[in-house]
Length: 184
Image (cartoon, rainbow, N blue to C red; front, side):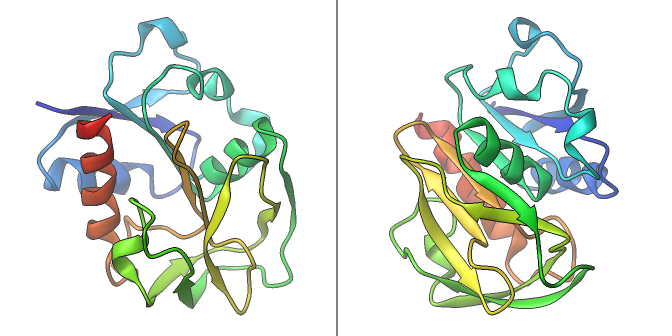
């Protein structure tokens, strides 16, 4: 059975990320971000959302474990910073419904959502510069980089929260990530 661990970056929805993965039929658990990278036994990793970069523990090292990684909100921002991109404050702060345009319908994570989807997202901070080797895969009127991917490294990120009920096709994002993990 496919095993995907959720790294707890102290977000308010981390438990929902685990539940969403369990609901799509994978073995999953929430793991502390202080866990030694060599101790992780997983076919994939989800970096949860969270309040800030000061409490990400060993999460940067998890990007080099040669398993697919999905960063959600802060998790995507962490991937961007660690791979040479940039993160800054968004023009639109708190949580809200956002219409997201999928700009890469071939992307294995979000391409199936094309041409657009409605999501629940926070934009207090957001990726302002996509790292080299990554492509922007989704955008919106409030955030230029709603999703990004580096398929060569199997690193993916979404600014929104696919685990919450307000996101229309969130389960599909998790199903797509499971498929990425199973084919890696």
